[in-house]
Length: 260
Image (cartoon, rainbow, N blue to C red; front, side, top):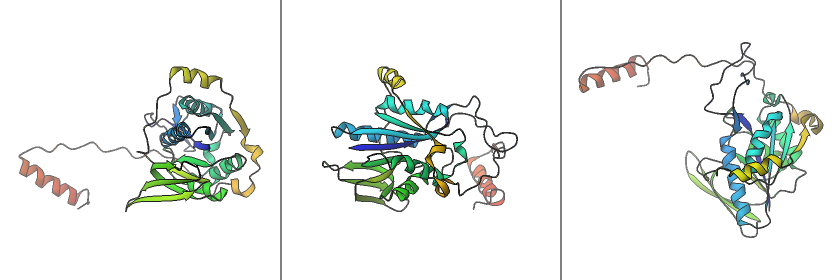
């Protein structure tokens, strides 16, 4: 069984994000980048499927600048077998649909049974790439999956997905695409030998300019400006007897916060 996992190289959520003075983007110098957390669930799930089904193979595909190889090698150290890196130094200009078009241009030439993506990237939170990629490839997709079972004959999957209204169980034939939600699994930590081996693994690189996407690769969304959120006001300490404090809280919620 051939499994393809789409991975994004994103700023570490524990890093302090600074906006450029001209508002054209974020300051990347000195910023730590990691594998998108939701994509880690996708990689882990693909590796677990490989461990259950003999002869399976996991291929990681990512779009990003040269240093995105750091995230690729993390995935290889976790247990992925091969990787494809679409190199683009200014990949942040792409929106979800354009990114999906680029991924589709690469993945369509791979022999795949199942594609697994994270449900969204933590830098833009658009959650568009997975479903758009499935549309470009003409395959079914199941989003926000928290449990995934692959049939013994590797011809269909059963996926459980959590929505705001219900818990759904979906069956579909392969090839297909799923997006991973938190709770699907617990990603493993790579061992030292695996990390050393991953450093020597060859990564296939594809210049983005060579994909020849045409209109499909053009962004539909234009980001006009980046800006930091307004500074948060200092908290207020309320003193007095519990009954008095409760009355003050209710008054503030009604008159100032206007949430009641």
